[in-house]
Length: 474
Ligand code: SAM
Ligand code: SF4
Ligand code: F3S
Image 1 (tube, rainbow, N blue to C red):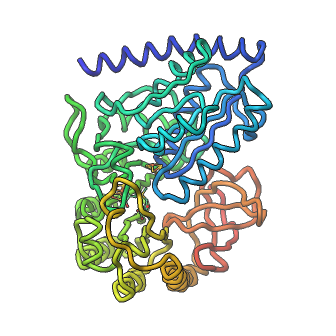
Image 2 (image 1 turned 90 degrees about the horizontal axis):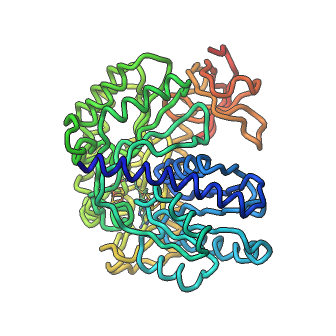
């Protein structure tokens, strides 16, 4: 029944999409309306941004990279750190001047920021030129929201509403032609004590495996070469599947995708160490399409801090996972996320993070200084270490990581790797691609190679980046 209601709702939105499209064109005196969509934050938000663009395209919009040229501006926001959030407020504020010059402009703010009560209030009160505010569970209703604003010139605020079914069949306009994002599961139930995500993305919901397989299969047929399965905690896939779905876990989902024919890679992110199973590593080791690479955030190398973070694993358990993965895949590479300066972390405890980095040897690290997020448990904890001090620790960590990553890169020099060529680096003028281990490798070559696999020999190794020369295009 719920599925039926979901389909009815999508059909209603499709009908409204035609009406909104007509009104948008009237507003631009018959010219094709133009949208500017800016996405902040993680891949999940990027995937949402592609749905938003899909919906806008269906309404008849074209797209621009310049906000000033647009008839509709949308900011798809991220709330994970305070600093980034304040920057978004600054950027939204700057739209006031564009609206002054072009009063028929429509402005929308959506994404994780708007799911916080205080942010929605601030947008309503201090940013009267923002016409539409909507939350992460309301994307499919964009046609209805635009229709209302275009017809009645009233502000629309739509938030909450995470209870319903996962909506399948929202159109997607993908940014890239060789790499695609496929959501495997939504939300997060982990409530790490520092993190806002469970509050703004809601509870975990897994997609029906047959829907995922169908989407991946058609992407492969369309010629996509790399498909990344997404979820804040993607390897807990399988809990909270829709009623009537076959009950499978993440390892089994990967196993089934791996059976699809074609020349493609499957990546997945983000995996939580507490849900990383031996079965998952076995599937990876025996697969045809899954690179021997995993992004496995550890956050801290100290047991007390990990426990305060509510990560539900300890240092030894994390290191045991790394050992198990290496035993099954000796060439596996790891990347990770780490937080410096969690409330109450001492310098000695921080040293445990450095020793873990040295012990594992990560290809790359995404490093963050702790940022208190209103509503989370860690925001209320005593935090005696100054930001200045944390910045010093942060610099120390970067140095350690740089030297570990450089060592890994140097060992790769002289070998030839299979690389998916992604684009051209504007700065260096070189083609840029990724090895299976997720190392970026740059080398001279023709544009016609973009989106293809090639054999590339590594000739020089920097801290994370390799330079190379093309051996053979495939
Ligand atoms: N779900 C993933 C996981 O569990 O690792 C990643 C989620 S989050 C979008 C990406 C990273 O942001 C986290 O791994 C964490 O390192 C960092 N992060 C989250 N909240 C933070 C905070 N309050 N301050 C600093 N970094 C934070
Ligand atoms: Fe945030 Fe933890 Fe969930 Fe990752 S697993 S999104 S860090 S609460
Ligand atoms: Fe940011 Fe939301 Fe992703 S808070 S990191 S965009 S889930």
